[in-house]
Amino acid sequence: MTETTHAATPQTARQAGPFPVKGMDAVVFAVGNAKQAAHYYSTAFGMKVVAYTGPENGSRETASYVLESGSARFVFTSVIKPATDWARFLADHVAEHGDGVVDLAIEVPDARAAYAYAVEHGAHGLDEPYELKDEHGTVVLAAIATYGKTRHTLVERGGYEGVYLPGFGAAQPMVAPPERRVFQAIDHCVGNVELGKMNEWVAFYNEVMGFTNMKEFVGDDIATEYSALMSKVVSDGTRKVKFPINEPAIAKKKSQIDEYLEFYGGPGVQHIALATNDIVASVRAMRAAGVQFLDVPDSYYETLGEWVGDTRVPLDELRELKILADRDEDGYLLQIFTKPVQDRPTVFFEMIERHGSLGFGKGNFKALFEAIEREQDRRGNL
Image 1 (tube, rainbow, N blue to C red):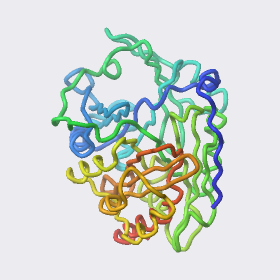
Image 2: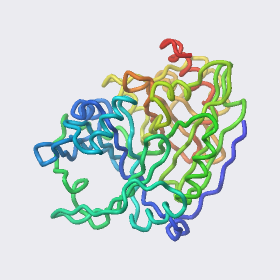
Image 3: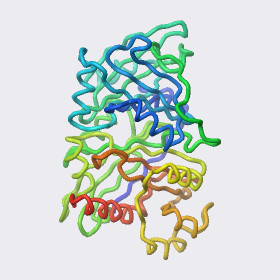
Image 4: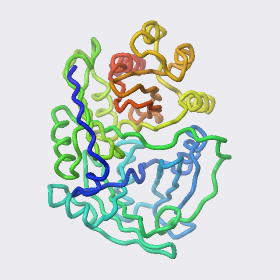
């Protein structure tokens, strides 16, 4: 395997750059039933419904629920009556791709400047900068296209004190929030693209947003006997926004990326990694709520302590909960992956607890691939 790591850019230098970002603003999903999706993520992921828009407050064509956990924000939107271009896009998206991510929204200090820079450097503009206002202030929005039918909305909300965006009203939680958060932030969002397209999209983020290449994983070592993939990670200089980009690699059988592309109907967001301060508590709470995680054989843990060393969580507890561990020059991380959270084998989630490590679990690739292959085989898709 070839892994390349690039040194982080100091935050002050990044803020002075041509495309500064403040972080992830929201992950926006198009779903068949937003109310049911909001209830599932409230129950299973411990998120809290904080805002809503729908027919009751003037949105006649779509209904959207905004959920938060720490700094992480998910928005679930479904179509009530597809009479506008946006509503028709959402309805078509669900019909073609199933429930999935349509927008990785990024908070920026100046949406107009960010949009102008992106378009000047090759981005396809979807929405020119525009303002939304209400009694809580003004939000400036713009949007550019990325892989597949995914977009990046650029959100400038420094002059806004409302719950989410103008047009949204505060909403009560659907279920009683857990005593402690299941996760605190979005760590990274992973996109799958077609064979031969990874470098093209890495260059897009380099040129259009000024992102740098953080890590790359290429070669035969990130493979099993049957399948393989290649991955490169792009990030803003502060490492607040991180986007790994995957493409399939030639192998004997269908890889997890090939399966995703087939069932999603093209490129899109494969998984979202959620940062937690206590992965044990998170996994126990999510399992109790019905979330299914990938299984890891006990053999994985036989030699784990020899190369990972001591971690916050004892080895026996890692084995019990099927949590993976990895160590690099900066520290270690603990991680676990859910099974797909919808009937199509597409979008899933990762829980990650970092202790210094800036990596993505390189040492776990083989175990992860084999676990995914077992699920693919059960589905008849390997």
